[in-house]
Image 1 (cartoon, rainbow, N blue to C red):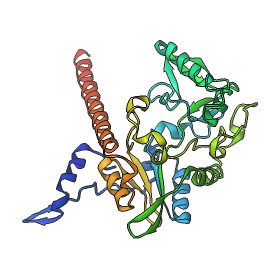
Image 2 (image 1 turned 135 degrees about the vertical axis):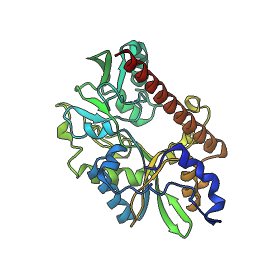
Image 3 (image 1 turned 30 degrees about the horizontal axis):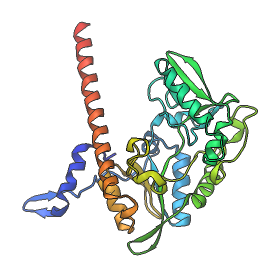
Length: 320
């Protein structure tokens, strides 16, 4: 879906659009970034009903909605009893291997799991964000799931899978101008329409799950659990958590009013889109650079892992 590093390099040819001699020079972005098939959205972590909901929201409110891409294992967990979307305050990533799509720790990370949960429980004080104070009282623990992994669950017994992360929501106000839509506006509307699909219902949660709303009316079964990355206060802060989340975090699915959704997979492309809205200053220059470097590092690690896996397979096959 147009995210290969080779195609991203074509951005350097942006000044050479059109014909040059006998050659047709490609544009700076992939030609196949448009998403049309349900299977494409599923591979990026959205259920077909969810993608249709986002498109209707974009059309109805004339919003440009950017949804961060996820793993296909999230889709497999939607609608399963005893699972709830991962709330803000839980930072452990969902697994892509064992018990795919669930928030897990390896057995050798037991101490880290206990430290993470203890930090959440300590947030039960007046100075902590309201949502974190609610989470602190939900009785989070870890439970062995076999195969050397620990699953995070709440006091009622629900385990956690991936929520929907919104990168940004914008409303066009004029040509080349848009305003950012805040979480107080979009989170309740988006969650209401997503819950109406029947995919995310309170009845799927374990009996006795407390229904205490967090910020923006978020409930335990709400698929969107927090605001957008583009409005997050620490998005430009290099000191927060070592700057690990500083800057933009593509890939994202761009839902556009009256047009097909598009897969945005590079920081450069995301910057150009925000610039077309007059919103380029959402991120500082340092944050844009950090986002580019993070994405490049992730690609390097991924490609290196693939090469190592290929080598391992070759060795294994020669032993057979």
